[in-house]
Image (tube, rainbow, N blue to C red; front, side, top):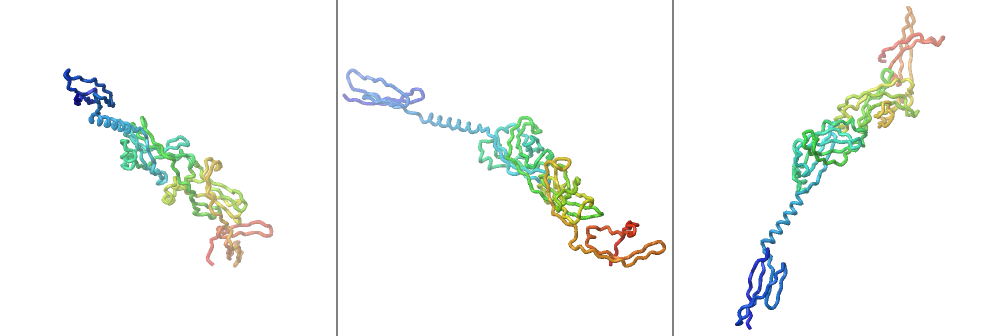
Length: 377
């Protein structure tokens, strides 16, 4: 018997099937075998072969749908990313900041602010509105699924800060980058908190004058340091280094020092770091080494928490201790005493007031005294 095979395509759901038909030339006619179809299955017997064919068009559709799902998942990036590139004190109190914040949570929040915050005392020092976003292609490359990443940058100078709210130079200070739906920066908002920022901690000072003037010890100079934050009481202390104890202290009134501010723009109190005080010479031994201390304290009497600057000690006694003089003329006539002479000593550098004293040696009493004007000899 001659058997011939013919193939026929038919569709079962979304799949095309191929059926082999076996035909025999018999007198009784053609007999059709039963076909059984299963997805992704091929069945073969002597009389029938089945194949499952997956259409190319449907495969592409499935791949496209998967890619779309992945893309949709990526677009839903709800992260909040940010970084503070720099924060520097300028002009003795302004804070210049730059950085970026990228987040899809900023949608509908068109008011952008930077806020200076003391996390130690939980106090806001001030805020500045950011006018104009800066292009940040580096951020856009790192966060391609964040819509505002390409313009995430900011740069601002904060000139309205209340530094009196900072209690210590080591307070935990941070910059907050904020997107808000309110004009004042409140309302619904999303924040990015920076890493802590560090203030300059140098202690800078100079003694301009330390001399005896009109029987007073005159002291002028300046002391500029961010360590004075939270310490609003400025004292100048006279210290006897030889004896090892304090002689006196004076509370200083701040004196403007634009020259110091120009040299130390990163120091907040530099603009008003000057002082000018005087001390009585009573109980001061000019043969001892004397030292001036500039102190910023958080209590009224100058004690408590404080930061000190010790200036170089000074001994007022001259190295040449010779004391020479002569009375050239002593004339008592017509009820008047006229005297002339000279008195030479390096002690005059620290004791500049020159007096002549008439003394009754017999009674050990002073009769009279007069301040004289020195003449060249």
